[in-house]
Length: 119
Image (cartoon, rainbow, N blue to C red):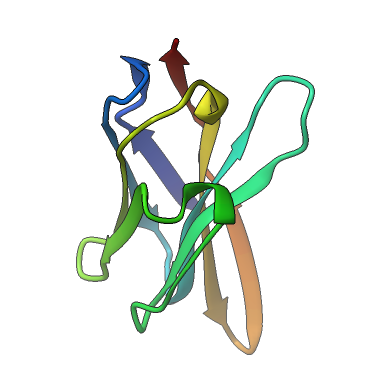
């Protein structure tokens, strides 16, 4: 069983910063990617940032230059440093992990952590 535990969400004013963490545990074989997605009320879940096991990163255009994703393969942990936060960043942030086993890929999600940016 694989579990993703997120932490670090909260309430912050416009222009502030937050750091999200996500730790994976359980029967994990070969992590391919870890990442963060978010879902605002009434909207679809969208990609925020991902990082591969080789440390290649990808960001949504809306967060480029403000958010930084990083990972610690040994700890099976991914971080999201969020700076210059805007009210439109308000959403539930979900951690995602894709790992490979026996030529198959498995995707797992965390329970989500609320980020609220006040204007």
